[in-house]
Length: 287
Image (cartoon, rainbow, N blue to C red; front, side, top):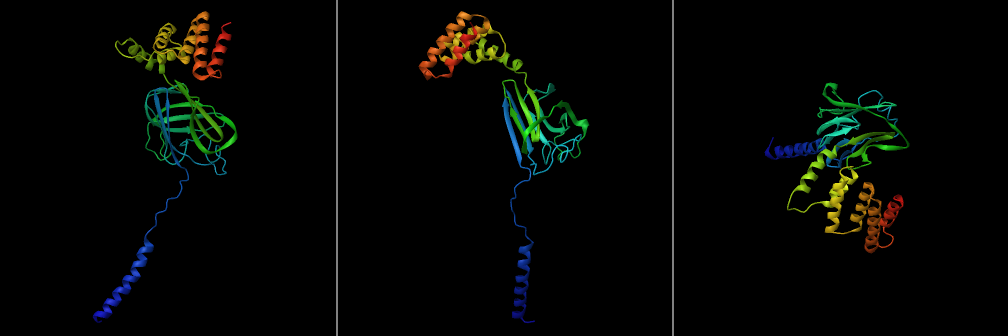
């Protein structure tokens, strides 16, 4: 074979090899996830709660008692096990849970669910789940919904300073879990220390409001609200004074404070201010 023939043969072979190499490559296409990942973050009181889970859709399927069998451990979502973390100790349906990160599993039932927090957060779903790794188990009562929810949802509602409701929602079922925090033992020592410390600006209004809302020492709350008014007399601060005095049984003082709050509210916001009605209602309750 002469040199020209050899070169021609190599070019032809290369031409045949190149397309086959191209066809062997796989093009990258991003397809939508069947169960999209979700990270839920919620600040409740002084506690940060984070939940990482995947959200399957019903897609016309019967869910609880069907796709998700009753009486069996469920990953509470899709894909990897659902993770939940707390920055402080909490109570879930009255059960003490230390701060930390856990896998959230459930055992659905028609009339009662079992909620499980596992110390093992490494599993793919519930495959390999071992009850010896359970931190806690507690019961929850499902609630029937009138309208179906297509996509599995974990959400917070009823958020207060020291509590919230964590809901597991899918199809026509909502499973509420009560989240509670020991806010008093966390915050009261901090408030007392700050208010007793010399030579610094103090959160008089915020401290008085917290003590009023959480049933703490109202005499201290009264002193602090007076200090807040001396620093800055505004309608909402004076309105809190009226509520504190009412709770202390000082009807005359509460009425006078409510009337002063109304004067300040009208001056600041006009006669349609919501504080006008709040003060009128308070005065009426004292008669």
